[in-house]
Length: 262
Ligand code: PEP
Ligand code: MN
Image 1: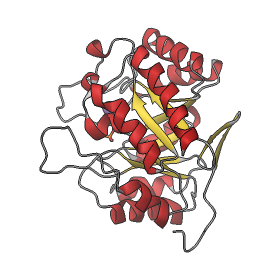
Image 2: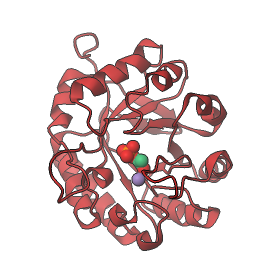
Image 3: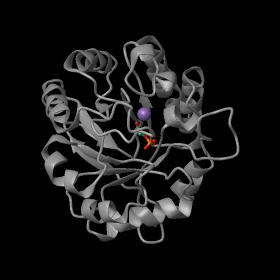
Image 4: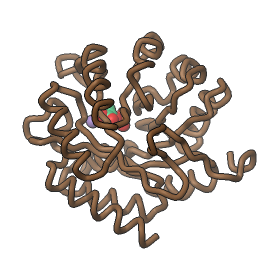
């Protein structure tokens, strides 16, 4: 809470990569890690555009059990090796308590997905680690519930937290979720933690993702996390909300421009 700590939290991931404070964090990558060839292309794209944070799931929470559920720990090891060789930091989802320890050495930021925001055992376990946690807002979670979930990790001893607005479920069916940009200034006022926006899951429609990403920056976000892939139409998951590299490069340029105007 801001009542407890006025100064904004800045997370230092090492090698000059920070989240929060006076810079805009840009994190991009595929929804799912699919192969070394796929990662190489994404990594080349990120490095060429000066992006240091790469997202990508190896444990995927899928609505259907028959959908691609990720490459698991083996994929994470490859992800880590390739990212390290290129100076990239890894943001990836942890789905259950038993994964925390086995993933630990291969992860720079543990992502808690929207389906696990109130998995209190997982939050307790992450309270005991020395790495940042990117905590997504629950699919039907209130702002207060997000902050309470953050409190679980915080009170466990891990103060390295990032809050993420990724859209909530509403009556609206024209978009996948309803990106609640109201949450950004409200979270920034209530909490000293960095706040980032995920426009990909927030709206779920590729052509509108850049606009909502830029709106997130104007709303006061400390960073943006979005999905990109060389060929979104063949992506193993979330292709419909995934930018190709041209769209991604344009967005990166515009994010930096808009951030300067703030
Ligand atoms: C993701 O980041 O790919 C993801 C599954 O996100 P969320 O938990 O917000 O649905
Ligand atoms: Mn996704």
